[in-house]
Length: 53
Image: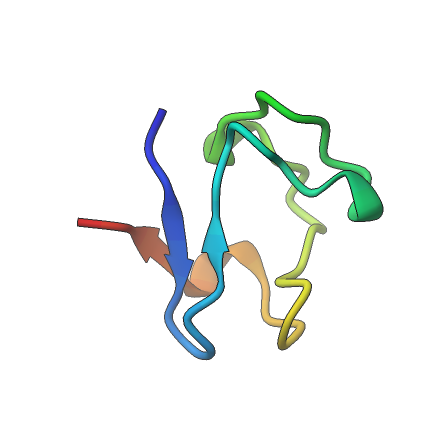
């Protein structure tokens, strides 16, 4: 699974760890993260993330 990085603050969403503190279970691919999820570091939406190269 691909990791995604926040274009604003650099936070990396790793699907292997998910974001359980914000309702995203481990093993959740980024496209399957709820559309209302926001970056836990800076609060921007999913549209501000890019695939980590």
